Image 1 (cartoon, one colour):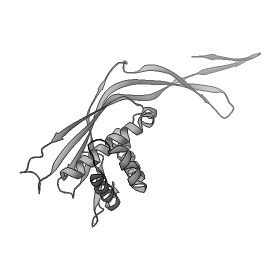
Image 2 (tube, helix red, strand yellow; image 1 turned 180 degrees about the vertical axis):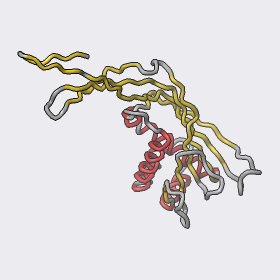
Image 3 (cartoon, helix red, strand yellow; image 1 turned 90 degrees about the vertical axis):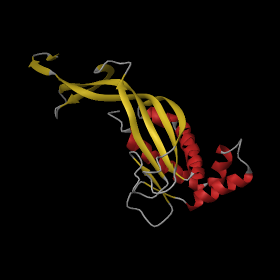
Length: 217
């Protein structure tokens, strides 16, 4: 699994999934925005998604873009923005460098075993903060879709090593002295266990003799 970069992975996942949602917005909106939403509001959400251009390229300008960034939002850019930043990562539940049981044999051109790669790793308890800034309606809509995407793709996140994910949501009030206009903010925080792994190579010496080879660690 290596050392997953959740910031970049979540950025790509949100771009991909929001574009998929835009391919059938009426269907998804009717499934996600149920209790508390009426037909008129759902129609407005569908219209908003039809007009939106999702991008992770900061140089895109001139359209109604939703910028998805692998870090906190930037106030010198247009809005809306979704910024994905690391709250913290702390080693937890497994000692640093514990063996995981995975082993890979390394052989030379003559198929002689010359080394074994032993996988080592640790769990860290991580927190990743998805900050959304824009006008209050679009941010509520987009935050709801972010929660939907994370819930929908739990198995995918588990597959890259982000496990036991919890979701929490809180509103923000950006400092008006620091923003060019009135903004509404909402944070969707993901907390869970992240698996970090690497391979340590152990050389194997081979002695040739009559009757076969012997291996020594």
